[in-house]
Length: 141
Figure 1 (cartoon, rainbow, N blue to C red):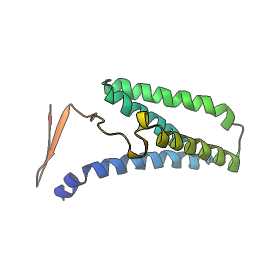
Figure 2: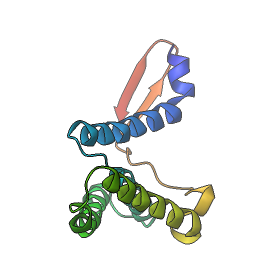
Figure 3: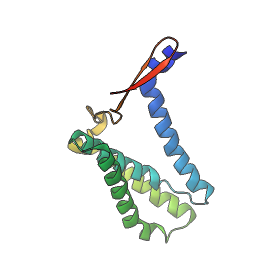
Figure 4: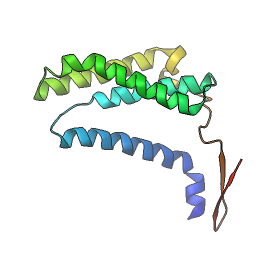
């Protein structure tokens, strides 16, 4: 069983991040708001944090800065979106998300285009974990 987790660790990390994104959309749906804008904010903050990590920023600053930029973008488009209801809100937020996707696919220098970004450093550098056949051991680096 440990071999499975060792071999599929990147896949499991991606699944957990996307599950959190899906849960954020679910929270909005449970509140009665049919909005896809959180996906666009996730993309903006994700690309920003990846580029700042590649530039050598410390990860706590990257986290704070990415959240603040996502918040600013949300505050900029929220006056328009708060006037819309039901289907029109869903269409407007879907259009925003598709606009962000289009920009991400065509802006090769910032997002890597269709290939994505490569060489983003790992955030977790203070703990080194290794999985053996029977146990998981973590130690400070």
